[in-house]
Length: 364
Image (cartoon, rainbow, N blue to C red; front, side, top):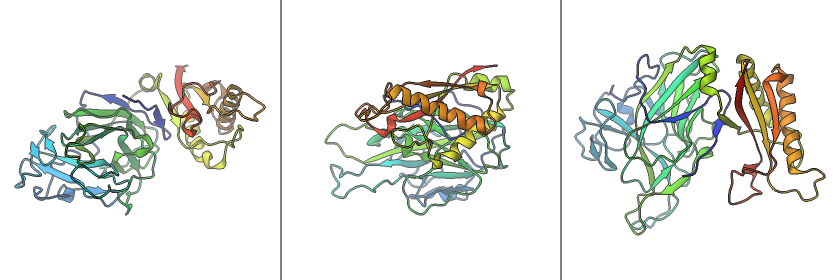
């Protein structure tokens, strides 16, 4: 099973967990889909659950014990069989739709089609406060695929995209393992708020997605990676700083929007926003000490320096930028690993391998 590194969109981490967290003081409005106007009786009836919307104009499904349709009932429905995690209802999303013709189909797939559930929080998040985010997920038995990349994006404004494809945003919480279990599993993690976040969008983020086929050849191919979703929660943790450190300690995060001049250590301007946010996070939590680890691809033709030296210089440039924005130098340790530890095992020259990772290593 392929695993992805944890991804830093500024101030979050995730833990893939199998233990459900209590819903006490849940800030998510109707995160269990129990509050409905009417039971579902057809496809895409998520709007019957109060406060639920779609972030990209897609047809999220709602399932209920009270449904008068066999296709959208609980536990048995058109995509499989699953009991609700804690009540009578749950939702279902197409996380991935393969662009292929199924055995009994002659038309192509939907070209990057993916569904997202959007829920409102009862109050905006408070800047600098850690929150526990949880959601339960189960792969439907009639799925043809399973994916990684299921996660959560938090925003101050409602996300409303009208193109029914993958959202072009960096998530704040991600399941980096491929979710293949047809029993309920919990994705859980700590998010340190930037402040003002009021909406939670849940779905699959192809930035972190990998896929595997889970049905045998020459069987009825739904082309879908379809997941049941239930019990979504955001809980204020009220952790003292030392407890937050223990949560973060040892985890590795990859800066997604950090780009350099080709074969140079100069940081491109489009990377400044992410680095400023990282600087803000490290100033907020000055007890954290991190490694800044640089990696390059394996191309070295015509370069006067080695890949190891280039990766070290890039790490130093990141440190220089962060200290210019008020981060203490003794919070930052730099390392260069050259072209070792490739992310793309099929191509040593892939741009995926040119990256900078942040690892929380020690505390004061």
